Image (cartoon, rainbow over all chains, first blue to last red; front, side):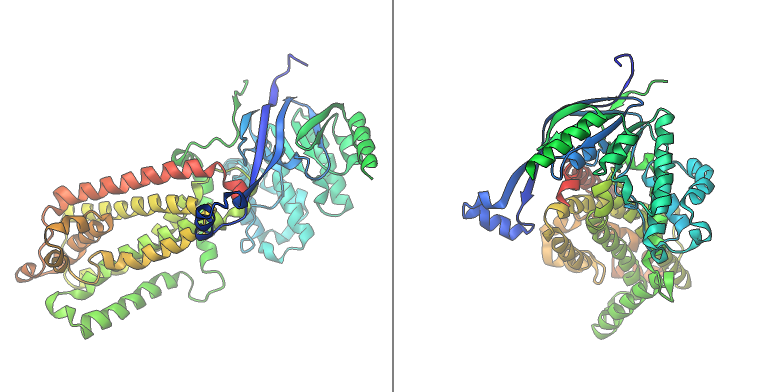
Length: 250
Length: 286
């Protein structure tokens, strides 16, 4: 494995969140003066000293219960958040199916949104021109592509968003909750597409609560608990460990 | 080819924005399409609103307070200041809100965050254009014959305002993420700005009142930009015997224009610096 190139590397990554209780300058000043500084915020450690190496072409499932820090780690890798300590580095373009449709604007047509969202996800004008037909075909939107997105059903909306995201062709793919997308036939199509991507040697980094699904898509599993990696290994073993741990909590 | 490892989300500031020219263009086009959605007049509102504003001032100040008797071609004097102030108001107001308004995107996908204030600058510039056309039309009717130097100065005045408003927009837009009071401070600035520059009155009135402290008034880049617009649009419509009524500020081109540009660039620099520091935590604070 050592001769392969790193795709993602995290070293001693720490992330804490400060939950602020006020957003008003006046209140903040009053509290400061009255010595109630402690009331102003609460610190929550989302990740503590996480170190993780992912090599190119690996398919990794990030597992853990709610609040274990999965999404935070994903956001650190995508660059949306910055760590408080340690370093995160990635190789090549990283794009995500994180909350698909975040860049959509309701008053624009499907066509305009394909361009806008494609550009937001890092595609060039030429790339979008080339892939436009393929995006529309995969999304099964058909003639509605020139209709404003606000008239789409929620299924159509998600299908178009997902279709754009899988066509961005990054080196590293971050996927958060793939199964939120569409009806069953479309889900199967998505999963097939994701497997096709990993077959092409793309690096996949998946967060999902659907344990059966991630075991079929991914090879490696990483288990997070309270912001720390507690297990890293073959995905079926990690899934079994997570199931054992959550059974204990009941 | 082996790509190097890089740190995700490490912004390069304003330069990054121009590397994303395609995305910037799409964001601007989106704003323009969305701004007047579902309205019958559409882009015409960009003409109607400033004209109405102009009429209100002209009737109240020009006719009722009779400023037009002491200031020849008062309509052009007034309108050339108003369009510039409108541009400033639009850039600063919208860019202050731009980060918070785009929170859905900023929380989920990494983009150089300066994109949003810069996009509002470009959108405002596009809305500024029709107003300038009206101004040019009106000036031509009044016998406008500008020199090349005056036309160049007008462009420079526009750039000064763009730089100043963007700098302040970056500053207050970033602060707005942490404290929403920022929006109210900006609203106040926008209220003052029309009156803090010689838009409605003439600068000689200020000099009479302030005396030796007049330079303080001139340090406001907005004031200088408005005076440049007067020099470029209004003076060339005057007849020789009318020049004496309101002289050009001494050293407008040689001293005050470079000073105003310098002050604006300094504010842009500070705004960008603060924005970069604060933008690291945008996603978690929004």
